[in-house]
Length: 183
Image 1: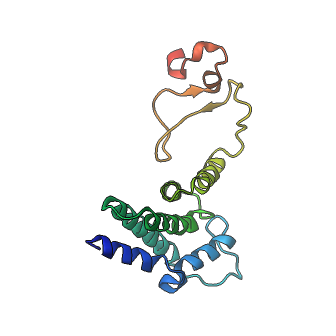
Image 2: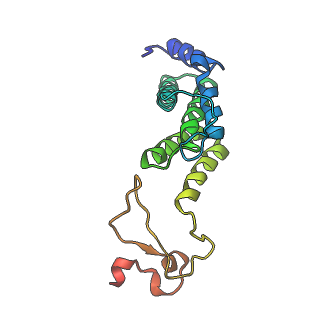
Image 3: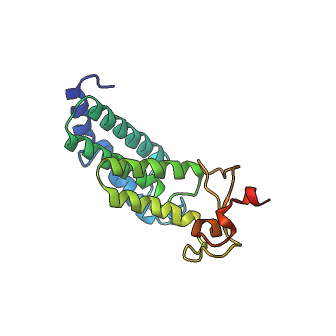
């Protein structure tokens, strides 16, 4: 691990060059374009079984380097480039990968990296894709129906605490009580 600001900058600059590690990022992005639920079409090129692991290691390493670089007083432009490329590497793994709690975690970290790199629209878009998949079939415009409830949780596990009903969220009668208070 780089110990000085200059070493960190040199490592970041070397890692964000197109073509780094046999075009790792480009291969990941190419695979993401044709990937569907973590599976490739039968006639797809061989991207290798380790591509996802390599992209995750690359993305998290760049994210760590960017954070350390900023913490040591480095310039924002170099750190933003590190955050952008880190987010792109992580996004290449989660964009159309197989659904899992692990994928959702990597999606969140990729969005955070985009945010740190000042790419807020890309961060929002990445998070929205994940939320859209989570709430597929849930009509967000019809929050007044009491029969639908939303639970908020952490790490994909549903909360055991009080649940908010749609009526409580919209202020529709019932005094805004939670389900646990009304029972």
